Length: 121
Image 1 (tube, rainbow, N blue to C red):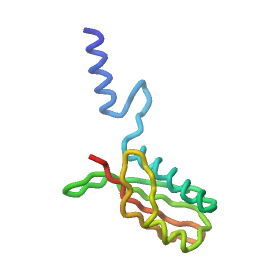
Image 2 (image 1 turned 60 degrees about the horizontal axis):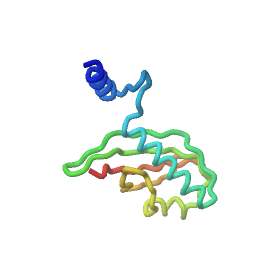
Image 3 (image 1 turned 180 degrees about the vertical axis):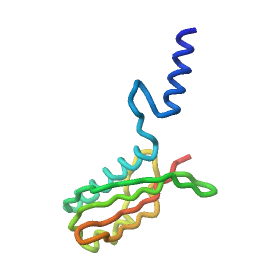
Image 4 (image 1 turned 30 degrees about the vertical axis):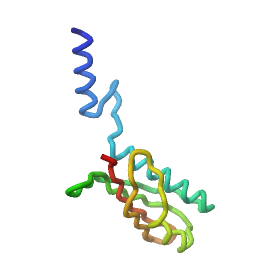
């Protein structure tokens, strides 16, 4: 009986985002972190030093798909050709399909990259 009660409490804690007293990262922030890492790896592969200044994400849904819209602000001295090619680049993000990538300058030396991260379900 105690074990069953603990299992219910554990499921309830997970449902509100807490496990063992720590906040559990939500699905959107986890995928955003993975996209940031993929974006930085893409820059590093092109020998472009880049630093993430900020990132944010919000849930997204259409009639047939769910996912998140992710925006990452980067400090990068990137050539225009690399920025333009980001919309066609392959970003491996575990558990997500990266679609609709748009990169645009935000200010000198800073760019914003927005991507739609689709859930596989």
